[in-house]
Image 1 (cartoon, rainbow, N blue to C red):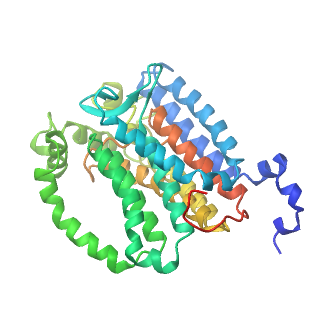
Image 2: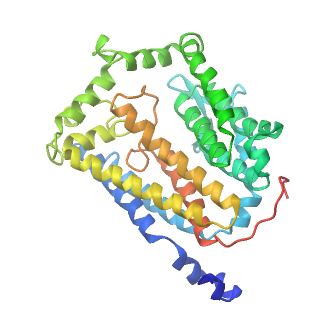
Image 3: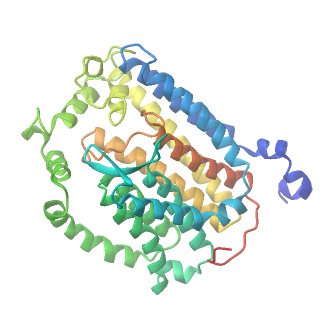
Length: 385
């Protein structure tokens, strides 16, 4: 008999009991990574809290409080709002295509300007896709999850936002949505024959998509990834400088604030996409490995939380959020090391950026709510109610 079973039902709903259910090791690891990010932003700014480090730490503090507050929210509320959040995000993505509504910057229309602030619907959709898929699979049978005509539903849940986000264009976010959806379908029990049947033609179609389906700048990024040395001072500059920063750090690094690539402005986007290269240069292999170990700890604890949930919705939702986070780390790490094209995916909690941090911490609020309310019983079915 579990400890929870020995607790009277009324006591399980007490705030003090819920706070005691929070995994503080998980929260501590998040604080470590965000603090390292703040320190690195201080360093790459030339030893100044402005313009990045102070804002980064303030945002993390606010987002940490938000995560803890969301962990108190009943899993039934997350469950009931799943399709609503997804539908709202989809409407906002579609609204971007309306002339005069979508806000364009740097050649991409990804935002909606509200006057006092701008929102990026694709970030809301990252949470929306996870919630909608978790809600769907909660009521699906094992046969439906493995292989049946009903697979059209999860495919549409993932495919519609993927196409809308790719059209903005925002290939990095579209990849995250598509890969997160694929990972959740796999974890739900999708037949490996279906996976193979889709993967093979997709692999064959990639070269044709690169040559005829991508925008010119996206195609240049892919071709540069294949041969960055062909234009080291042009399209290959980002990857070349990142590799120099990674290699020059050696075992222990050059020291805090002493990275020549970042301090002398050779490393582009040093506060966002390529901050991990700055970490490697200043703290070497040991520092890089330590950060990656912290990320691994966060992912493993989150997956453990997912496995403990008594509801399929909780398991799928927590695993989906964890998949998105792991993909952030994997894609950015591969990009910085020259193992993947530059697609504008930041290193979560380490890079500067309020929108991504907010999305990640809301997702972790869902993960922690899954832990706090892991014994919650949820109704079956796919309906909105």
